Amino acid sequence: MEFSIKSGSPEKQRSACVVVGVYESRKLTLAAELLDKAADGYIAGIVRRGDMEGKSGSTLLLQNVPGTLCERVLLVGLGKEKDFREKEFTTAIRNTVKTLNETGAFDASIFLTELAVKKRSVGWRIRQATMVALDATYKFDQFKSKKDETRRHLRKLMLSVERRNELHDAEQALQQGIAIGQGMSLARDLGNLPANICHPSHLAEKAQAMADEFKLECKILDQAEMETLGMHSLLSVAKGSAQAPKLICLTYQGGKTSEKPIVLVGKGVTFDTGGISLKPGADMDEMKFDMCGAASVIGTLHSVARMGLPINLTVIVPAVENMPGSQATRPGDIVTSMSGQTIEILNTDAEGRLILCDALTYAERFEPDTVIDVATLTGACVVALGNIATGLFSNKDSLARDLLDAGTEANDRAWHMPLWDDYQELLKSSFADMGNIGGRWGGAITAACFLSRFTKKFEWAHLDIAGTAWTGKEASGRPVPLLTYYLLQRAGMLN
Image (cartoon, rainbow, N blue to C red; front, side):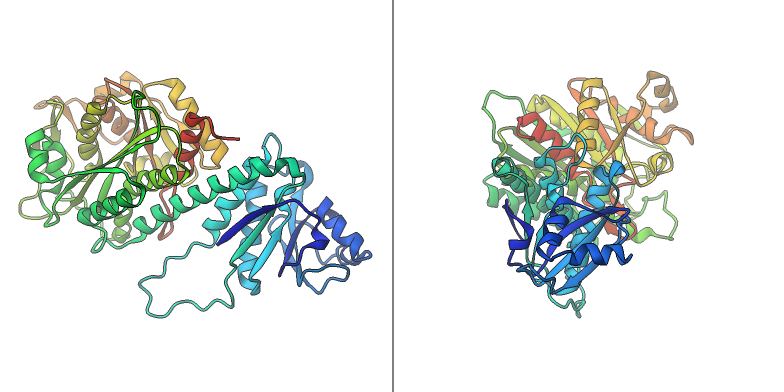
């Protein structure tokens, strides 16, 4: 989809459709009033008769509105004006784009981006509108022999700003929104791929292709190299699979050579049967999404590279498949991690932490400023937070606050969870330094406590995306927006 920014009057737009808003009850926005004035009260008459109440989620398509140069006018309900905030704005944009995509309009001019959203800049409105538009039009149908028929896909969107002096900030925000939207689409594509295609080697190939595209440094470690490094915790997860494990490392150098990098670590379990601790059969197909942490950090790097942010960023993806083969790790086995700490594997379905701990130790060699790991780690986090918020844990409160702020700004929210030493007691093992599970209660917290034992040398945060990485049967692209907004803030480029 092509995007553009413009400052102009709605009645003068020669597009297939002009989009304006109506508040509840039946109050026209400024752009709608301008259209109505040109139409000699035509729109106000329709609204007055009750065809459009202005309720959030409602739309009304008008054809051949007199006094205008466009083919159609789309009225979008905004809800109550006093309640019009971030959620209502993004809902209005999403409903707009979905409706436009069904009308057969080739292009459209959207004036909703002129609307005031409390404490949000014009840059925020343009960036969010662009991200939502790309998300709303995303399709994953490459494996369907017969594609769904659409009358005529929406191809061009013009986003309006009220004043010409806002154009510069709006244009920068537009490019950022496109980059974030593309990063989300890449993450969704990787997450939606079936596990017979998206295995560790496939992820490695995708990483190398992205490195070639953006001139990144790419290093991929194979099993022998990981054995030499002592990554026996990571390798224990892959022992039952015919798919060879990979450790993928991508480096983007946008800042000064002397600046320490930010490191993102993404869990890349391309399929998770649970291993010997086999999962129930119901919904096991969704375990292809267990690499969405990897998908999200790769998608974030894509966004950063496209924007050319002045930061240094390294992405590490431990990629494995967890299968119950004849060589698979058994409950009760003890392994030595790369850090030298020993782990009693009490449940082979708690495998994400086993690959992440070695990846976190590997991150030490980059002398990072900050490390953030992203993982579909625990069902317990879904029980705690549902599918709304990502679980956030950190050994640095200021880092947690920065990530929470970025999530709120991006409309990709997280919630700060405790990481108290009291919970560490639950990981005690009679035979090793620690067990890989902590019992029934506080599962998301004890998983984070396990990871914290491998992060003593740097500032670290852990994002448990088990509830937010996919919705229904489709990857969501989260938390690419949260991560990218955080990196934009670090780069000082968020207007």
